[in-house]
Length: 321
Image 1 (cartoon, one colour):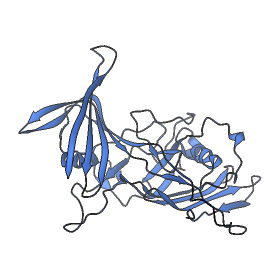
Image 2 (tube, helix red, strand yellow):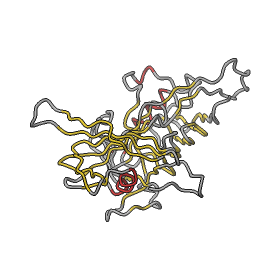
Image 3 (cartoon, one colour):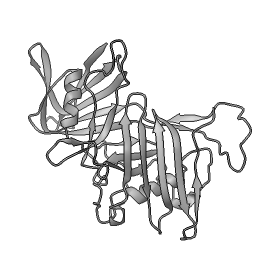
Image 4 (cartoon, one colour):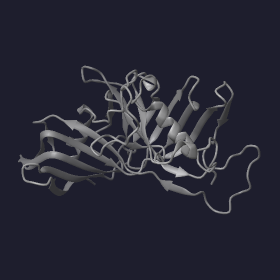
């Protein structure tokens, strides 16, 4: 079964002059397990040849909403000695929602079908936070802040909100991939948009994300202790430090986004593999994170001690079950 059904057409704004149309639809395909929510702001639907098209007005956008992309799971440290078998299954909690926001040029027309929308998305530029700067670039003195509702926000891993930069793009198959009767799980993967608009999977230097916000951010850094709360792969301290060391609001972070080997989103969770290494003067010296369909496989955080080269390395290798 495949369908794209407009289930809500509404508008927002306090008066008639300011009202902006919003079209909401469900993207559903059982062959490869697509189940996403589409929100088109500033667009209208026009009938055409027995179907309809999205017609984009000024300052319009497409928002692709994903289910939670990561699971925060309880882990058990095996050092200095393996713990006793736990009496209950590991505790777990789903991350918050994820959205990719695409900028639309006025007058753009997109066939209002599942295939039509999927085909159009890779050609559309992303709308991202001002703090999601490109590799090698940064603002001069802006502090961390969460992405706005109309900006791309990916919560992966749990409680950490990341975003690609303005050169990022997402690419995916339009039709199900696989032999008759079987299909791969649909995924959209991060790539790089060249200046001419084409996509480049080989440009590892510009395939980046920046951590823009930590959902523990309202706590003071002094409340965090490196290595505490050992039932999580990433501690609140780690998330706070990763945001502080990668967001694009200060010149010191221009060259330290998270370098992405792989980032793919799906209806069942994200695959990601990224890392970064920092020089002296930062709380974290090295960070590497790999997850598969929303579940951690490998997490390494190296701390600096007393502003010297001494470090602690933590390597939880996934949760015990």
